[in-house]
Length: 394
Image (spheres, rainbow, N blue to C red):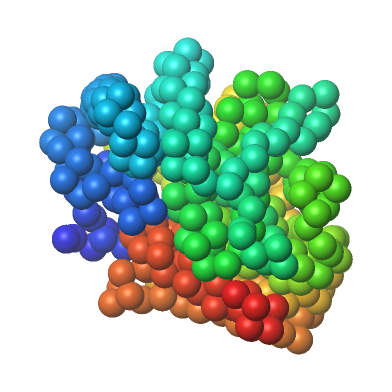
């Protein structure tokens, strides 16, 4: 594996498969979901063999074909009465359909695999007999979707997990949700504005992210019996910004966790735009996949141009002086220097008297962005911290 030069938005310190950095990241993500029920190694590498580096269309086709194959396998298992086998294959089909839309253009090409991933995920949870209840949180005339997974322990703490720029609530189940459920938590996974498919309803990334998080939390308390003081909040990637906002506003959380804390997304976004403009001026030609990634980012943020993107994100700032709740910061050593600088500064500046920062190096296999290359370690760090906060109840 080769070590690339660090860039503002770097998320992996090493190249794993593809020269296209976005494509390499999401290939590692597909691999990282395997232990929680996503694609197995052989399946993921077979898909990769069908992809042309940097070509988004070949990515969509290859992952879609794998999803169709696994969905048919699930039906075949079900016809034989092997319900668990069906659920396992269906969850893998979900993972393939989910990966498929990563490099689709906003619009019908995105909506089609997204709808297939939604159907496969819901069927998989049912076939696996997982304790799942889907929910919708009213928000600005639309709805924020999610799922609640109830632990068998009636007194289990509830952890609300919110993802980032490239996530949906369903994939959070494979990223960390299943790991936390297995470790004794009840788990809520939810999309905030601009996440998942909510941009299709005109919802975009919020500056005041504490407000939609509070709306989701209200539902968890009122419908699912979550108890203030027995609630935790975990944010991943851009979700590391969302939860730093909530940490300073909502007193119902016993602890807040982030991989990584990201109190000033505006800084990274502006640097990334400038780096892209400098590369273009030097004659660099972006791949079709990277162009689609940029277009998807703009769509979810509500922007249409780089300048508008910078302007819309300019107000994204969190105040560490407001934060007194116990706070866990998790950082991969191979992540962007911008993420690392903000994580360390946040840890030092927050007013919390109980706080910890965990930095994971290459030897841990978890040095990527949001531990994309070792999701189990992310679940372990969060569960161990919560076990301390909730006094050994996990």
